[in-house]
Length: 307
Image (cartoon, rainbow, N blue to C red; front, side, top):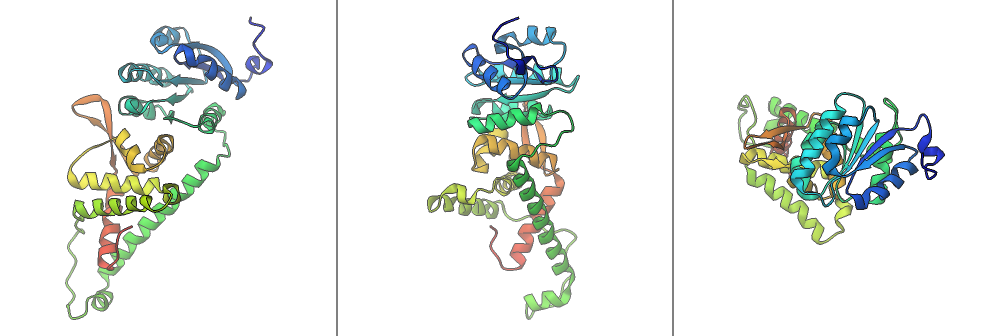
């Protein structure tokens, strides 16, 4: 037993962690894991993952650092780790390069991994804290709470706008007030989608603000991603994880966290790429698409501009 091992590392109730990282980064991750009160079972390079998993009896967390690792190799390692964790209660913290997002992120998302891309020190520390918590534990995470509250408010606002549309269409008196000189005509069974250019124009207008104000002032990744996915749906195109991160207009780690949150909320779905089963695209759920249609229809009927 090494004299360098601390009491924290050897604590009986400490989370047991396997580190998968290039040799040059292993000590950095070891120090971070131990500072978080966890026990390091070992550190191996990505190429040695098969042997490491074969001999690994139990672990509460696997930290995988794919920074600087070839995207194909990273995706293969991620797949093996995801398969291993499905057999038990083991969490994953994964650091990915941007070019590995489309190959590695989908399989890791399915395994419930905490995904990071070019994270700050605080991002990494927070990810370790969340992942090392005992099952069922509730951690106070101000960032997640703020995002959850914003998502709740977004859902409520979209639902409210959809309700306004439904109420407005069903009330002939209100329609007469809004459209003087025109008689009431029954609404068709379903409201039509807006033209894709309308949604794209909304996105361009939002990005114009960044030329005049600090972008962080108007950061709204949930809505930006909803708009981008809705436009893609109308155009019949697909959106990759990396493209959606760009559309979110926030740091990649924040975007990845939001993608997971929106997926858990039933607003996003993942669709396998028919040309490459290793990849997956992100798309709106039926419920989210209907809510977006309702929003744009309500805005148009009230003579407002979408935001």
